[in-house]
Length: 387
Ligand SMILES: [Ca+2]
Ligand SMILES: [Ca+2]
Ligand SMILES: [Ca+2]
Image (cartoon, rainbow, N blue to C red; front, side, top):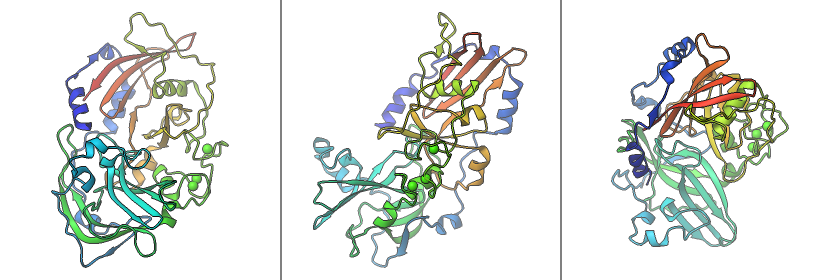
């Protein structure tokens, strides 16, 4: 599904390009020079993979293990011929196709399943989630494990060990893999090398549920969001972490944050092409504050631009890191939040109050031209790329 969607999008390349070359910006040239992009893929050092430990869960050596088999990539549920007809028969919104392991033991029922809630959907592996019920399947809790499949821990859906262990916690066999090639969309999954086999991962319920500051986000989710697990309002703006659309930076609206909010919110006053569009973004209007709901998607933005850091978005929960914060945490594995790339505003050479900036998300990107007028910001999309 994911691949065929990207194939379809590829057929549309390039969409259009319009007037970008008319606007030179020295700032922009310097920025892209400094941020040398498109580094080629290099496998992580084998030592780093073999010394990997999870921040939250223990894995132990196991003697009688089921060996890693890279041809077994369908789960027993996906393999079943009738899975198409019984899709979504399990729990709530968990698709049968996503289920890795399932077990019922007395009143307790548990699933380990895949989701793409926080990771890069188009160029990444799925996350490991747990669904758990201790009342015969009447009510369910869903827990994020923080583990991304194959990065570098691989969870074996074909393990014959029971899922619920004697203590009532969840266990599943695993091994450590090393990614050897990049994700090449739309055709390719990367290749992996086995580094260490014969591990048993224990997902204990106490750790899965732990929410030290009681803000509704577990400590594992807060580690993913880089919010403070011991403070229920990381940025001190009065909105608790679980409801805050921008939990790391207090909103401080400026003229420039209006432009970035409009972009992220896909505002109807952005113009597509210069002709016949006089819409502007009002600088005086103050939008209402939106809160996170169940369906809100979470994205990562790395930026040093204050106008972008202080936005108050309504369409996405944004986790904003400065370049220094992002660079100072080691990123050996491909397990980051889904990332939206937005450049700073670059001043156009020799033009008053005029800027250009670039945007990229999932499989598409665009460029914008903005100018401050008496009525507000005029924002025009000048080019678009779909890949
Ligand atoms: Ca918390
Ligand atoms: Ca918190
Ligand atoms: Ca807050």
